Image: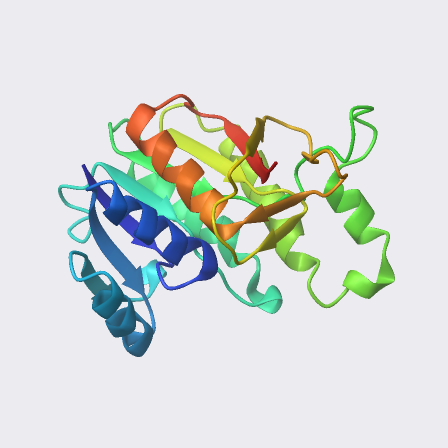
Length: 217
């Protein structure tokens, strides 16, 4: 399997690179920072690296790939670019077999089983989130866009409410549209858990044109 990872030097991206290499998947790691890409290559010599802005990627860059993982991240003031990149990838891969995987935010999950509020509704009602709330807002728009795409082989994964660096949890919770919480009430996904969940989906293909969510148990 050949996988192209956009945003490979970010928190989610590097965790996916590590897990993919562990499972024998051929990886092309893409990013904008050549220094970070070089360091990633030093850690995982089996990968190939491509320094290029995600919005400059062409069909030739993706040639021969089985899966493209969009782990793109940007500053909140440019959060709209999450939607822009999703539309670019969808336009490139209409009516093709290539899978496109998206790391989506927790904002699009329901906050609880009542289905009365999304996690983003809670974020938006909290004044302390103004500096960064554009990111979950635009990842919500990204999922809304994807849910209306029916001729592209896509899927998405949302973390729990708190998405933090860390190793894979020994116990992993899975769900669809609700923010998951462990027995202690914590709603957290570590990057290692996300990387593991992504690679397991690449290997076993349980989801098609839908989003699911994972959390540390």
